[in-house]
Every structure is written in structure tokens, then in C-alpha cells.
Image 1 (cartoon, rainbow, N blue to C red):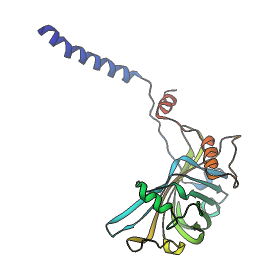
Image 2: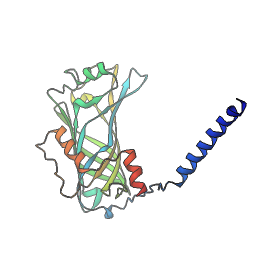
Image 3: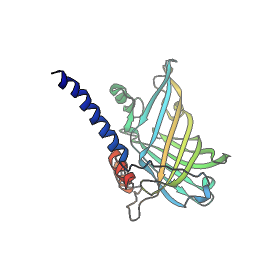
Image 4: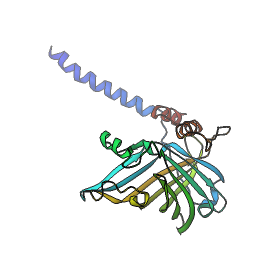
Length: 250
């Protein structure tokens, strides 16, 4: 009995050692990657928002306690990258207003309702760029027309071009951007719940744009937002963690 009690932990230790040695011998390659902010290196043409790598959030004052953050779950966008880089390029974004996510189901319904976004009448939020003013080698102020609740107002975003390179996994030409801006919701007719809910809306955006795969169907302006998202999803190559590991091993 004493012998078996001694052998059990020894066997476990040997098994752990064997597993560790096997893992160490697995030809798993760590994917390394670098991007360039040299705009002249970016191929011209139309890029689509990568449906798997983006985020758009709004945050707003809540009773002076904190900035309450909400996000959108569905959006499409296209970037026309022209010769001249940031100064000559244009972007258009369409957000599904009904995809607002506050992490509070009751509040979701209130924000989507007639007192705020009224998504049954105004289902989309749109931004179309009109002007770019450079402030740095890879940054600038992007002004555009923002349409919310049927009202259009100019809004300026501080934009940073994070870089370009072919994606190491999908091989698609990919560009990355960060953007930050603010607007008054009252200017869009959205003054409900003020001053309990503040007027100043802070916008944060992270976005990757990809060149469509050869032969892929491009979404059109007449295509619904959900259908556009489905088309864009087919234009990219989403990889699960398992497939990423398998690709790295190959």
C-alpha cells in the first residue's frame, strides 16, 4: 500500500514531464508582424471595413458619477484610398442604430425607442467624410457629415493612421486606424433626459480596412446593412484560434 501511494505521484510527475516535452517539440511558430505608416506604400483602391476587427463606442456623462459607455454591434464602411494618401482619401460609414448595446436590456429598449434614436423611423447612423486637415506624419483632423435621427451636422474626428501591411494570416492588404471625437447630442434633436444624462458625446473608433478578395462580391448602396455585413464577412478570412495555430505550424 505504501508502495502504490509512492508510485502514484511519481507517475503523475512523469506524465506531466512527457506532455511538456511533447509540447516543446511541436513546430509552433510565433507570428511576427510589422506595419508601415508610409502612405505611398498603400495600394490605391477601395477597402472595406473588416467585420471582425472594429469597434465604435459612445460615452456620455451619467449624473456626474461617470462616463457611461455603449457600443454598436453592426456597421459597414468603405474607404477609398487615393494617390496622395490621407489628404486625398475618403470614408463612408453606416451604423445600424438598432444595434446599440448598453449592457442593460431595459436601457437598450429606451435608447432605441421614440424618446431617443427612434430606430423604427431612423434605422441608420451615417458619417461621410468631407475634409482632412493633417496635423502630423500619420494623423489629422477628419471632418465629415454625421447623420443621426434624421439630422445632419458636421463633426470632426482626431484620426491616427496606425499602419499598413498585408495581414500575415489572410494575406489581404490591411490598414488600421484609431479615431476620437465629440459632438453635442442636442444638435441632433436628442435632448431627452438632460441634465441627468449629459449633452457631450465622446466617440471612440478602432477600425481595420481590408482589400476585398479577388472575385469577391462588393456590397452596394442598395444592399441592406445586414446583407452588406454578410458580404463583407465573405470578403475576409476569419480565422479561429485553432486554424491560426494550424496555419502557424504550416
